[in-house]
Length: 167
Image (tube, rainbow, N blue to C red; front, side, top):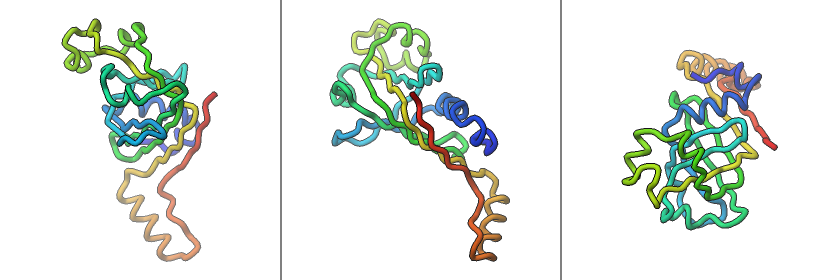
């Protein structure tokens, strides 16, 4: 369950923890007439980068031009954490990152493993994020809705919204 206090005190750390706990989010390239697509993220918080394995002949790879920007949206596994991240994206077959994030799940997609000629990676350099953390408690949600309905000036207190900018 996402923590309100963590969202208020350490939102960047909470964001990277959430990115690393989801199996997939939706990635899209800005200005490209293409639907967002599911991609498995691998976060590197030290560089504010999200890495994605993909194939060199994928539509998303062909759509990335120099200076391209992307958006990545995720929903936390408990459905109480939502984030929209933005930043520059590039195609980069970084062998150290391929090795670092490699798993049996990833291997299933590449016939020749780490040496597969179609294997590449996308590096999304996150510079902006919007976060929404909501209560996972039905009791708290119901209580807040009831209070708001009894008082026209009261808004339900069921979440935290944060905006982050990274260098």
